[in-house]
Image (cartoon, rainbow, N blue to C red; front, side, top):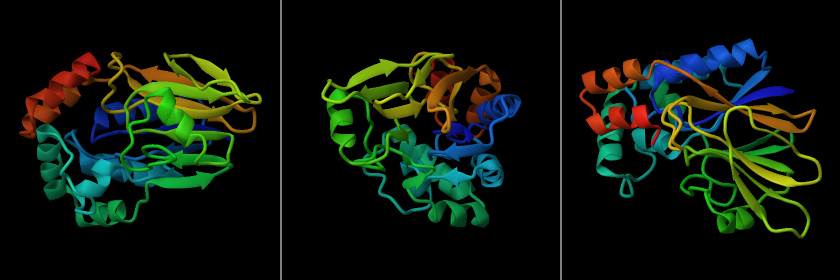
Length: 243
């Protein structure tokens, strides 16, 4: 099973289309989406329609749940709140109903999926070794894939050795071996690791390996769409910097 793992699209249709073209070129059998299809970007309905059509598995992220009123926005920044309010008003009834039924965690092909972390599927930004050590105790599978942090990285643990965090760049590859792993593909629509290119990850379940990918997309077009929609300009600016 050759899988494309994507996450944190955030209404950025320009980035999503570029990633899906790359996924198609590489002959992936399925697409797994780890959530946050909407929020921040200017095309929530287009992104929902595309994911509904192509993803074999899709989780709900905190922005998805907040946009349909299923999650409190008390912890959102001012820009995130503005984008959530705009997105909630823009969603079609069909996409609203679909997002409402998404859940933040799943298991398929002996892989654990979570939007945030296996320990806290909705809200946890899994970025530290301490967090990963706790989350590795929360699932039994060898591999978990997570999103939410918008940072392409991996955590690995081999027996009694300490957990190791590694930030991942385009083309990085790992073979699972005897280690246990938490993998983050990075963000399709709003990368925050200094690389503005859209991120995704190839997962070969049968071979036991993962490869991180980055794709150039029309950042200027995505930023212009945000500005034209009347969303906060900072949401457009950060796309250019990958922050």
